[in-house]
Image (cartoon, rainbow, N blue to C red):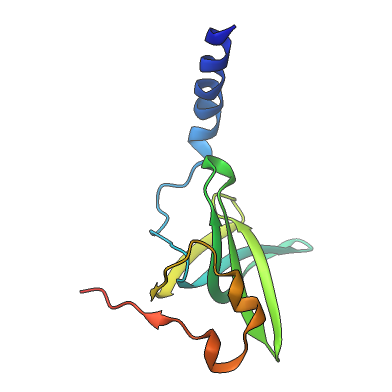
Length: 123
């Protein structure tokens, strides 16, 4: 019975391996990112870009997700992206921020200057 439990993760990893993207940047919670998503309209395809701050990241191999938050016209908008999805064409890091939390959910309840994050300078 215990042998069967050890084999399952290996089978799942071997199936997921070809679908995992290798060229992703090192994204972390607190980074400001620009994400290009492939949108299909009729028979045409285009890339739609959206920007925001990563407020959470869920690492689970192929199902790794990030939650991106942006305030548009005084309304907070959050979107969850599967980063290994074939619809995600580009993830570009605009700015890295210094954070001391794994999840930045507290940004939901703040507005204005209190939502700013301290920028991390990389040499």
